[in-house]
Length: 183
Image (tube, rainbow, N blue to C red; front, side, top):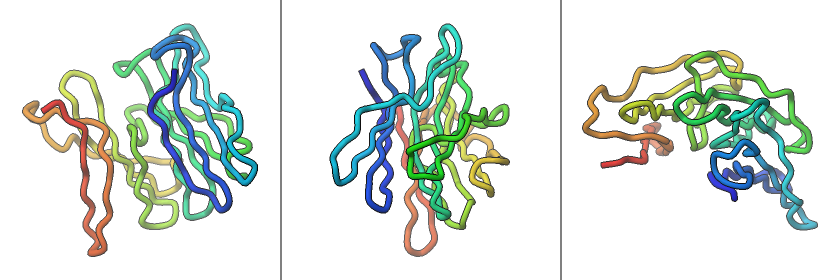
């Protein structure tokens, strides 16, 4: 079974990643990647996997930076109450990947949707937590994910539980966030 696909366009190919395994939440769950080029779709291959009992991978987000590298953000851990953010990058259009790096404590990276890159290397990541009431926040990196800043939640009220924001960039410079809600 697979879930939460993410797609990125390259010069002459597409990459798609998703989390998958025998069933959602099972120990074998990892991040899988397929590539489509002129010869068709490749077979799925696991590019990120958990390293211990109950350690799973979730919600991948692919992003191609202005510099041409492809960054893969994902969550790792037993479930959404205990997971942490991870990052790996490819300099050859997804053929090989760097050693996965854990993001700093309290940083999850983009929760489910792509970051917005308005300046080279500066990513505004739509993010959220699912502990207790759902909360939306944003994280920013100015160096493609090496150092981070995080905002507080958009609202302290539990009247509007929301997660997994996606960002829209308007021609006049405004940014709009759309969120998944339980309301």
